Structures are given as structure tokens and as C-alpha cells.
Length: 467
Image (cartoon, rainbow, N blue to C red):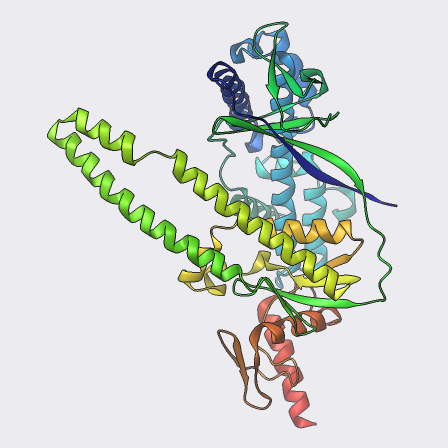
């Protein structure tokens, strides 16, 4: 039976000021190490150093460079490893997005695409292309008549487009610990601190003992400890049942079977949006008063307004509380879907290529922006793997704009999809059925350009009308 990683959490009781101060110092220095690595090694010129973390570490030790962090060596080594891992992931994502784009670029021949993929596969070639260095064309392409200058410029252009900003950790509220940095005893976890040979005892709300690299997160005056565990996947003995789902906001999931799950999601998001609008309106009023006092030179009044009315503790607490409520509801809805639908495979949209600004109006985006990025997708994939359910992604182009019965282009307005031939139906159900059908469509692949998708759908409709 397969296993997957499940993150479990441990919680502490309230910490005293001395312990809290020490933990915050470790977290802040841990953040500083990561930010230095990001700023120093995220650039193009650092590509040759990817995968050479040990070399960087040895240099820091040899030159005493690491002493500036004032942390036990295990901490900064973990921070270094974490940051370099994130940088490697960033470059992997850049290459993935370039590969996805060249798949849908109709101006490139198969040989052009082969060359670009080959360059992306090897860091030494990729680095030389990005830094405009002259290099010998790989042997397998030497007899090809390719426009290498154009292709290399295209690689550079795509890289600039997808590289984004240098990663940066703003808040020093988390740090990692390997097994040599902590121990459990009498309901406490004892964490290595800055002073040599000393550990901070932190009382936990449970007596579980973990034995892996942990992540410590400081939340107000407590800590939350995240521990990855290997758990066995559940056996799926259901009869073959492939379902399509459409993810939205009013209904979390609309299924091709005609059922809906997560009907109360919009209510949760609307209430929070209204609450935040009211709170922020009041806070803006106090900020204006604060700035007015500063301009008048009455610093004492300005500080009183800031301390009494512009604090972040309650504000952040309510935000976290809401996010946890929404997360809990998303997981509950997913569990209900799996329990009632009994799927062996879930088909859903690959929305990486969809313009977020076009998919939802501004009022809805304001609510959806409260979601933790990627949480729904992450939980879908996790629960599918846990329950031995396969999942696959399809090209989302026009799944919500054509009738699933006759293929006619229709009009979607809220919950209603109107087809001039078949009449009205529920828009989300119509989309989920199209998503399921798209899985078996051999002409429309995941990376087919949306213009090509429309052309294929129109040709099918015209052929159907002629027949």
C-alpha cells in the first residue's frame, strides 16, 4: 500500500516573555539567513551553484561568515538548505512554464521545441544562453537548420517573463528544527536556543512525540509545531466512476452527476467581506486622526490613538479565525463529495492558463482573495491521493460557454446557462459535464491554445448542422 505525507500539528500553552523573546530572535535570524541566500543566489549568475549547497556551507564555515547570524550551526544550515531548495523550485517552475508555453506556440516547429526543451534540461546550456555566452551547438542539432539566435532569444524572453521577483521573507515567525535541535520530555518539547548547552522547555497541549524535521510557527504568544508524517493511503474498492467537477465560489464544487457540495461557501466569504469592509472603514478613520495629530505636533495624542485603535493583534486573530473556518468547511465539503460520489477518478480544470481578471467579476475576486492561494487545489490532490483516487486536469477553454448536449455556444449568467436550442440549465452543472467530456477529447489537449479550442468546437458544430 502506498504512503503519502500528512502534516499534523502540536500546540503550546501561552509562553512567558523570556521564552517568546528567545524564539522570536531565532525565527528572525532564521529569516535573515534565508533572505541573504535569496538575494545572493536567486540570480541568473548563480545557476551553476544550484545543487552545490554543501560548497556554500563549507565556505561560510571556513571564512567564519556564518558567525554573523549568532545562531547554532544546525539552524543556519537548515535555513540555507530551505532557501536553496526554494530557489531550485523557482527555477524548476520557470522551466515548466516555458515548456508549457512552447507547447502551445504554433510558430515553433517540433525541432524548435525539441531544441528549447534540450537547453532547459541542462543547466550549463541554459546558463550560457541566459548570459549570452558562445557555446558549441549540441551534436544532435548540428545537422538541423534552426534559427538558433531566435530560439535563444525566445528562451531569454520567456525567462524574463516568468522569473518574477527575488523571494523574500517579510515576517520572522517560523523556523525549522531537525532532530538534533529538540527533544521531548514530560509533556514538553525542549528546543535548542542561542546559548550553548541550553534548551527552552515549552509545554504542549498533547503528549505525542515526533521524530522528524519540524517547523515551528509563532502565533501571538504561542507556538504551533508542524510535523510531516507518512500515512498509508486508503484502499479504493469502488466501481469505476469518473466524475467531472467545476470549482466556483457560490458552490464550492458542482459535479457532473448534478450534485453540489459546499453550498454555504459564499455565505462565509460574504460575511467576512462585509466585516472587513466595516473594520477597515473604521481603521481608516483612526489613521486619518492619527496623521492629523502628527501634523499638529501632538505626538502624545497620536500615540494614544495608535495604541488603542490601530493594533494588529485582534485584527490578525479574527483573520486567522476566519481562514481556519473556511479551510474546515472546504475539507468537510471535500469529504462529503468523496463519500457520496465514490469516485475512482476526478477530472478538473487546469486554471494556470486562465486570466483571473476575466474569470470572475471584481466583487467575487474580493471574496476569493481571502482564500489561501492554492489551498483548494492542494486539498483536492491530497485527499484524492489519500483515498486512492486518480485526478487529472483538462484544458478549461470554453467549458462554461458551450452546451454539453448539442455543443452550441450559449450564454452564462450567474447560475443559469442558456442554449438557444436546448433551453436553460444550471451553468455549473453544464460546465462540470463539459469538463468530464473534455477528458476524452483527443483533439483538445491540456496545452491546446484557446483560439484553436474555439476553432475545433466551431468546426464540430458546423459539421453537426450540415449533417
